[in-house]
Amino acid sequence: MGMFLRIIAVLLIVAACGRGQYSAPRNLDDACALAGERPRYMRAMEQAERRWQVPVPVQMAIIHAESRFIGDARTPRRWLIGVIPMGRQSSAYGYSQALDGTWEDYQDDTGNRRARRDDIRDATDFIGWYSHQSRDRNGIALNDARNLYLAYHEGHTGYARGSYRSKRWLMNVADRVSARAVMYDAQLRSCRRR
Picture: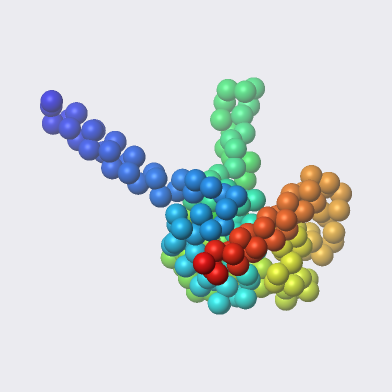
């Protein structure tokens, strides 16, 4: 095998190994299984809960709705005439699907200029930070997964205006986020007792 082919083979192997860290956990419907498979995720969410008082199950439900725990998730591409790529639907990226501008606000506000959206610690901290702002700006309780999600999706101003009310699909998603947070909470209480 020539030197060029060896280099290509090594690069492909390294690229394949690095990709795995962004894949979703196997069982997204079982918080205990998720915690067992990805203890790093749980440590990150617990740290964000200590800092921002946003319960772990609420963080988990928001991440599930936004990215299904896929670290490098992006919005779909837009296409012209079905064949010419026109960029992505938005700049949302990572576990939290934070937009570029909102992520920069988070970095500025927290002083964490090195934060990355594809790092679970930074993503959970972002969700805690954003939810904390939702409480301060819109009076949303930090355990109210439904309304925190609506503010997360619509932005603080959109939430205050009630822009979500005309989006039945979004209200359905927020209801599912709320139900998932309750489910995750019950599961975590169960497995922590074992």
